[in-house]
Amino acid sequence: MKKLFKPYNKGPLQLKNHVVMAPMTRSRAINNIPNQLMATYYQQRSGAGLIVTEGTSPSPEGLGYPRIPGIFNDAQVEGWKLVTEAVHEGGSKIFLQLMHTGRIAHSSNLPEGYHVVGLSTVKATGEIYTDTGMLEYSAPTALDKEGIDRIVNDHVKAAENAIAAGFDGVELHGAHGYLLEQSLNPHINNRTDNYSGSTENRSRLTLEIVQKIVASIGADKVGLRISPFLTSNDMPAYEEAEVHETYVHLARKVNQLGIAYLHISNNPGIPEKTHQDIRKSFANTIIYCNGFTAETAEAKLQEESADLVAFGRSFLANPDFMRRIEKNAPLNEPDYNTLYTPGEEGYTDYPELN
Image (tube, rainbow, N blue to C red; front, side):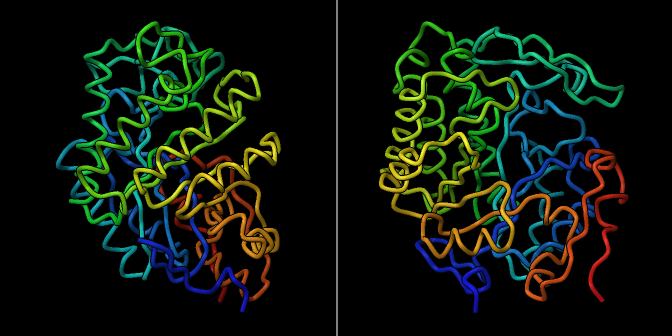
């Protein structure tokens, strides 16, 4: 039997196979509250050993996109219970991805009375989806120390809410140009306090949040997603040795905290040395994601550079993805026009094998 299909047992992760469904924003949470339609979507995809949900905001000011879910009020906790119960019925584990969008946001996507915040006032270049069309990113207000403390506490409370909603754990989104990665990048984080400057200072926000969540819900229920050398969402590149040092430092520190996994968003720009040094620095599970086929994922598992492999678009368009790759059946193609629209179309209506 291929490794993809075999059970995975390492530390706190006891999974029915080596496959992870990657987090993907789908914008179906009306009024930012998870619902029965979302429960159906995730249950359809419970062939994965582990599901990581779409990015979910720990606070109102982190809701940078339209109709993304939150985990900061009672209605959201109750809505997420529909999802966790459905996924557990399917025999999968499910982690909630905590995503504060920071400056990658537009004010019209936020609840009334909230504004876009960031580590600094550096505005992102480009446009973001809103329900009235594509608009330029809003200029962020720089967080003061009180604001940073609030961000940390919001993440901890959100993690506690996730456990109350039945999740097996939380994944911190430290990738793809959102708030935590903004704090790591010296071109975006130009503060003059102890949250900027050195590698240690730029890592401080992420590590404070990890440390306090671990203290609250346990290290076995925490993962961290990173995307070294990726420049999506207007993340300026910086010096290779500094990027390498930043992510190896993070890996060492979260390893000391004993978290369940590191989830690496793979890209061709990551040097082999960075891959190797992260692997040496982190003892628990490493998940790789981005661009894998069933064949390349199996090869990645066989060479043991990854413990688990995550698939995104393949699960998006193929609720029965595991059955399809087991039978070597053709895959549905995603409908990119319905990625972020409300409703069932392009969400729960993809055909399954007979």
